Image (cartoon, rainbow, N blue to C red; front, side, top):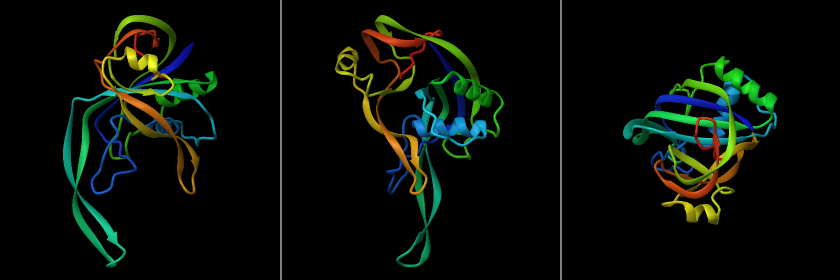
Amino acid sequence: MECLKAEFFSPIALFKTPFSIKGIETYPLPPYSTVIGLLYTASGKKWKGERFNISVQGDYEAIFRDYVRFRKYNKKDKKLETLPLEVPLFYNFRLTVHILGDENLLKEFEKALKFPYVFPYLSGGEYPVKITKVKMVACRKEYFDTFNIPKNAYIPENIFTEEFRVSLEGHGVYYRVPSFLISQKPRQHEWVGVYYVQKGTKVSEMELLVDEEGEPVWV
């Protein structure tokens, strides 16, 4: 089995949740919809219903909080209001993505990431991203007595079974993250259940899908 592996770096990153109310809250990693958007932005094409699987994992050096001046129109009083807003930001964010799908589609994504149509970005155009690696890699299932998860990761519900839960040293944090787009008007996504597991967490006596470089592939 082969998949496309890509690594990204951004000095600053933010993945705003749609449920932020008074302040801005962030996902710990980009949701699948953000990665899908990056792939199609790089290719200069629109998504036409293609389906593929994505593994998302990453790391950062620190989280810091910034303040921005937020301007919002008050419909009731019919005036523009200004207020300070706290924004959590990831510093020196690194992202690793594996994509499994149709061979021709993977080749298109590989070419797009090596020669992007426009400069790619994560979490808004104000945060550019550097593509540090793009390559096809072989993937295989391998049994491990003990495996240390090397990077913070989204682990899908289909992997996070009761058997996996028992083998995990620690607990994951459950998230519902947007994935493929269902409709433009109104804008709606499919929502996928994942568990966010931090790097260094141990998994014991489990068969895992890993790439040829020894990194796990969470699909």
